[in-house]
Image (tube, rainbow, N blue to C red):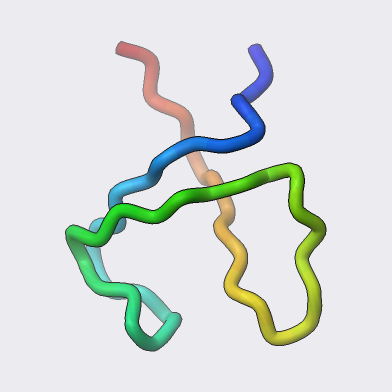
Length: 49
């Protein structure tokens, strides 16, 4: 099953990016191509409910 192009992600734990804190909600748009010096999100595991 493919992920939606845009989704919300709640941050847990320490982030390596300044200004992104545990508990923050990020809007992730997979249709955008990453560029130099931008923050990117890597999905490590997808949990099924």
